[in-house]
Image (cartoon, rainbow, N blue to C red):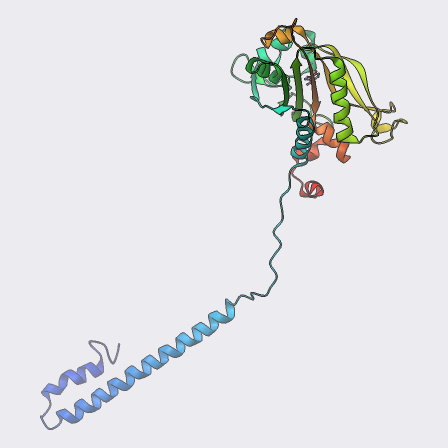
Length: 312
Ligand code: DAH
């Protein structure tokens, strides 16, 4: 700038040539032009050197060693509850049971009344209910209302498997959660019997827990089934001799079941004189606990990778 710019000293010299005596002009002009050419050449050379140095610098700092092995990318896996639900669905799928889903916000009518649980029925104490702001609506306390929805939507023969998230007002501990999963089963046809139910559940137990495990029915009570039973499998920990895991009974209760109550069939739009059905319902966390030896169901929702990575 100082030399070659518009107001530079060399520029001034070149401009001044016109005012010199004619004899001096060629000599001064030649020298001045020479000076300009060599300064410009020096600048170009210097620029090239600087760019080369900068490039060398970048090459050194930004170099990538393409031979370095890659950082391993962790592979995801199904959550143990989803995996267990998938196994249950697969096993019942072999018997023609088709998966249906329904709403988590349910109406009181379908969650309770149509399942033969009247508003003042003492059986409502079995479920500690979470209500929502919309009158007459609640977070479903079990998957059983899906029985009603399926019966209203399809004609027999019905073989439905009804998985889903359910909600209860609970004090959370190792065996109680306010959100958990159930899988419900429903079969309705002409001439369906308790024997069909037992045979199906025995096959389920064999597939899920092993062929060698004994099973039994115990009398139970649910308002929406009559008769109602609890289905037990020989204790998976002690094999039936009695241990703390099975409260020394030798048996573990897997699910509740029974023959669909005639009133429930009627609410489903079916004639109980013509159709019979059975239903069953199980807690997925409980099945997962039994098949993986997990003792605290809080582990399923804590997102602790040390726990989850064991199920890959
Ligand atoms: N709904 C019941 C519960 O949440 C489980 C159940 C029991 C479902 C017996 C059934 C059944 O379909 O027949 O405890």
